Image (cartoon, rainbow, N blue to C red; front, side):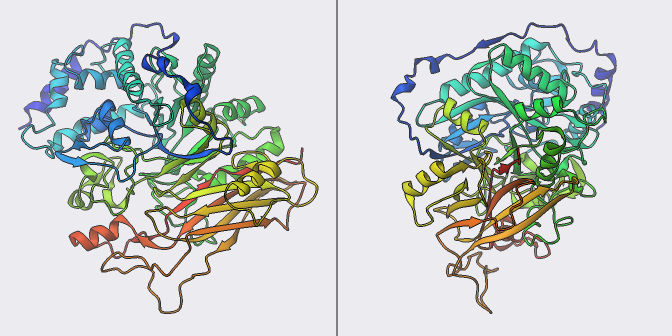
Length: 615
């Protein structure tokens, strides 16, 4: 029974080592079919349309997804995003609502190795190592894995990823294999791009593990002007080296940005006022980070990163999908980062944490946009999350002290206000931060800051008033003569629950460098729960349809505005309480989640902030 692990260990010991021969990595235009499109024929809207997408998607070319049992290809993942039926783990699956745009972001770490293990024409496909890796799959059972072997391989790879002296493993066949795998991703993006209908964006995940800290970024390109192969944390070993690589790539003709995610798992390192070596950050550091990191992923399957109930006790809605590894840390959360950003802006003259908010899934099944709480196919994390039994029985791969059901949620989506559904328009909206996050629903949200808004306006007139008299989410308030106003409009998801309220979260730094925040309920549904009414029926999962509103709108003035304070404002829109996936599993399959804090949830949306600076 121990023969295979012994052979694997011997292979590791006697290996001749990885092929690390340098390979040129020029930036070039890799576009193929997209060169044929006439973008002038795509209709544009100066008031901007709303598009829904997922910018965090893994396929079988991600080593951790492959070892979780995922065989979904890039082509299949894009087909799924467009609303087509694909088969995973022997099951036909399909999105309820197609996405408008998507980026596949397989890990750049071990990308070439994954290619060699999964593609039968790749170098070394029939090597002992790759045969051993594929032997975890039971060919007669689409849900079958040799879990003992799977855990051994997974744990060895994860321990290597956190090693400060990390390098490619012995079975790495060279950077040309990484380039070939990258080419598969690019070819799929070109194949499925249809300007005006469905947009694909080239991307990858740079996955830095600093001890237990997750300091991961998704890197997204505007077009197909890309490097020969993507950089990984095996080459760019800290965030400053990543930004340096991005700067060099930009100077070579590419346009790209990096999006941090899972700051809830960053061990306090997400929003530090120091660089990776522990030195106080400089203005140059702050400017580099602001140039390349203009967004943060606030919600995904491995937890929510806005706030944590342990530190935001006065925020009654802070306990939403709070997952941590070990003890929670206040400095992991986006609201803390936004406050620290305005403090540093006051000190340095540049805000290093001036980031808009997006959501995405981080699916490792190749199923972008799979966020429905009541869908039996809610899993996004491979075999451990594919059905109710596995979720309650399996241990979480990254922290085996926890079960899968204690960690996962269906993930989020990113919403973009753009003139048209093309690569250029979607990317430009991301770069200017006119975007927002949701916890997986499709709440519509407009948010403007300025003065002189027409509170009676609706539809196109409301949007016109917003742009003419102010700035949209993600921007800086224009110079003010008096107190700022904020125009907010939200509409429920057509398939979702009613809206309960709109909140504004304000943060600021005072002259002494103290950081503060306040939450305002600026719009409440007239249909609040009455005494004795039940929000959610625990036996059927039905939410109270007499509660909440289809639409909420408000013009709110900050009466406590201090023109000397560096400040930010963002919107949080909350649905009425509904059943989470845990309640649906409890009702349908009899699993007991009655003590879980997220049995009933308020799905939500988070806008990108609007900032104010005295200067």
